[in-house]
Image (cartoon, rainbow, N blue to C red; front, side, top):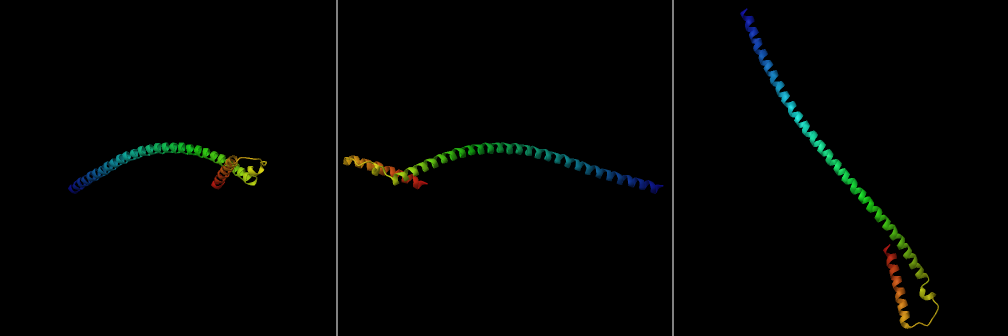
Length: 136
């Protein structure tokens, strides 16, 4: 019977050691779970903050894009006006080259100063037309 009692005592010691070891492992596992929860909470906070920042940046980007689109529209309308004026001036210049005012007026007696002034005006018109037509 003595052997049985010793065996039981030995088994109880091993059981206590095993239970103690299992409890230690459970404690460590619980501690890891608590730490993991803290990390998850921190990551969720960071995720929410980044989501807010991304949304703010998206809104800012949308505002800037709308502003740029408005400016592009204004520039396009200015470009159309410029092209229209350029075409009109080009046509006017071509008319001047084809039938200059000087040649179409009836021959009258003009003073030299009047002739010079008229020629200067005509040359200025031609130069302006050439500048505009060469710009396009």
